[in-house]
Length: 87
Image (cartoon, rainbow, N blue to C red; front, top):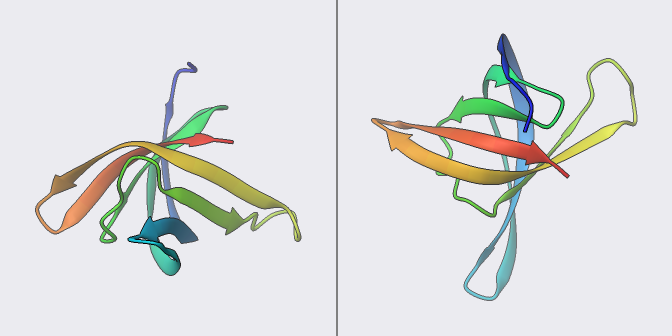
């Protein structure tokens, strides 16, 4: 949708997902590789999958919560590379 610009920053986030019939919340971290107005590219050790929802607090604006959905993810050795879209 929008062209991504290279970005290099650590991120701590919560992954929201379903496992069987249970709603799960996992706190994890990763690194932002690129960013645009509509989403981020990131890498993490958590096994992200399309459809997972991520949420994290804005470090610059206290109380501002960001929410994004994983659009695609691929495993790269012990890491996962993913593209997320802001929702």
